[in-house]
Length: 91
Image (cartoon, rainbow, N blue to C red; front, side, top):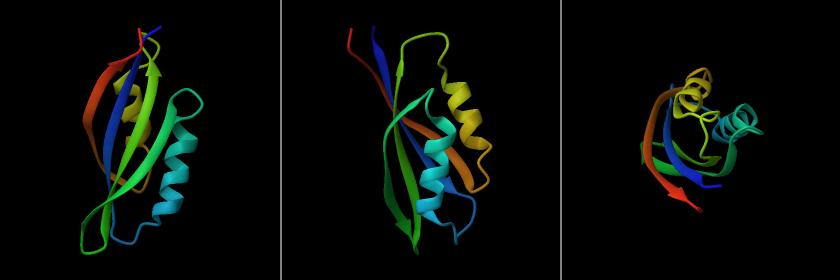
């Protein structure tokens, strides 16, 4: 079965966010349904960072970007969500 690889870029809702805690929260909210392959920090400026979330999901109607974005939007410390990249992997 093919899978879809997504990279989401999320920005914090405030300046003093605890990035390690935010990463743990993101991972715990998405898994086990959505496989988080990694979360990396990207410097924006003035000590503020964006997080890039790497997710792999099966290509199926059960798994949707709408659901991923809804889950992420409900996390208190997330201010913005952007799908940066996606591709189909495996066949």
